[in-house]
Amino acid sequence: MSLQKAAITGIGTYVPDDKLTNADLEKMVDTNDEWIVSRTGIKERRILPKGLGLSYMGEHAVKQLLEKTNTDPLDIDLIICATITGDYRFPDTANQIAMKVGANNAYGFELGAACSGFLYALQTGSKFIESGTHKKVIVIGGDVMSSIINYEDRSTCVIFGDGLGAVLLEPSPDEDGIHNAIMKADGSGVDFLFMKAGGSKNPIDAELLVAKEHLVFQNGGPVFKRAVQGMSSTVKDVLALNGLTRDDINWVVPHQANIRIIQTVASMLDFPMERVMVNIEKFGNTTAGTLPLALNDYESKLKKGDKVILTAFGGGFTWGSLYLTWAYDS
Ligand code: ACO
View 1 (spheres, rainbow, N blue to C red):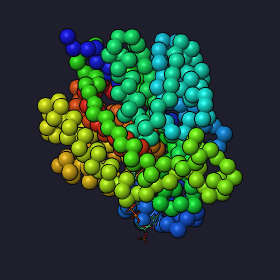
View 2: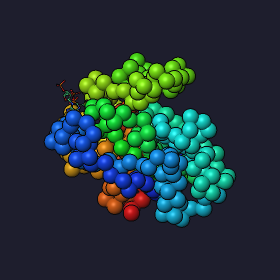
View 3: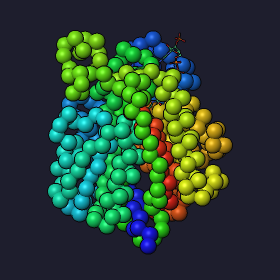
């Protein structure tokens, strides 16, 4: 007997109004629009005003999601929030969002995994539905990357932005929904992309603050290579697992880290860019936010039954690909 599938039944998103353009960055660090666009594909990013935090974006996105799907917040069982930039180190931001939207019967938790966070959370949320114990699960992916970026480091500050998306998972009435996923991790990647200080290993002190070691450090070259390899290999593995070829797939939804990574993955899969979701030019890399923000931008083009592969790579290293068939017409 096959398990009850979990289906995405709606999307809600929030991006801040304030834009940080390439022209703005030219005034802050030694960079230029031509370098940023040609090396990353990014034209602008959104920046959340200080003092609001991730739960502010989560509240707005989830309220939009509840309205779009005509869902009573009291019917929500569980909220999983993928992020590396929660409001506080503790307590948990998922529960702050539950409180703000009136999901008073829900419990929730945060999930790390950096840029693969939404994918990990989607896979996790689907299991709660498949087991039959939960009927309405909200999966959130988002980050306030501006809170952890060093705006004196030109190699990272041009890439990242703020944004968040949320999806509702419900039991599928038919065979459409989340089919399966292949998730991977390699902890030896830690030194290439991480925040050196601020965790229990190196608690913040004045010296670390002055050295800006509480902010994102990335050695971009090796991360680029591993991202291309990790995303393309797990897409191939997911295709094989489901007995599909690239021609069967309507859409690939890649993590939006760098347009050159996306193009290289598409080319390695021999997959046409017309069927690859891309919105990196508007928002940059919002870490756990990129996949739901891309799905939202393409929602009107998605049709019930469309075969979709989501793929991501992030700090950790973490990566993977997930196969679903879209469950509704917009
Ligand atoms: N403007 C102008 N020049 C720059 C800039 C900039 N913003 N940034 C770097 N440069 C310079 C470098 O100093 C270097 O100059 P040099 O040759 O004189 O030394 C030159 O440009 C090339 O630098 P590279 O680092 O080789 O540039 P690259 O083409 O690799 O692009 C980038 C850097 C954009 C960071 C790329 O490596 C990348 O996208 N990496 C992967 C990012 C990613 O996928 N991260 C994972 C997800 S994020 C997460 O999980 C939180």
